[in-house]
Length: 138
Image 1: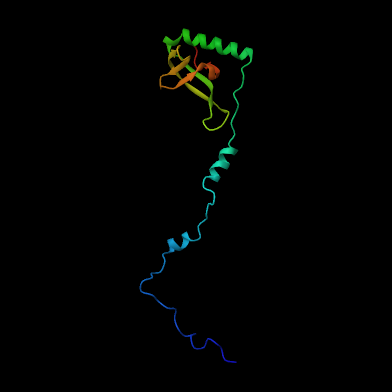
Image 2: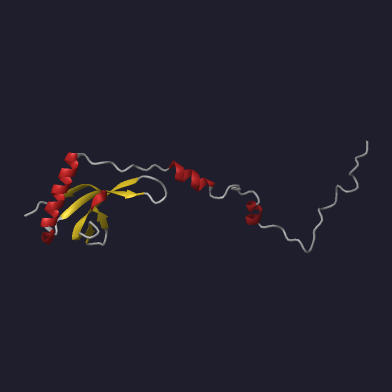
């Protein structure tokens, strides 16, 4: 039985002058993944990110915090190094996280009720959960 394509089997594929072979990079781009929903992955990871709620201090914790804060305010001239654990609210969702800052307080801003550290960081007293001295006072 004769083959229907015997007359064209020996021919090479046609070459066109105005078409150039596609580069490997362009060919690979045809098969790259496609994100149908732009930003969906970011939204899912933002939803999955956990935040802490701001804890209410017990009466004993508040007493200790106030005592240490008063001691700090009395000894600002000595520039003691302190460690403060405070709450930072999350910018995108409810809740936040607790952060620890170690440093030397420059001044207490009584108008804003904030501690101002030598490096410019400002921490509101209302956001503080703990205040400790990292070195002994004289």
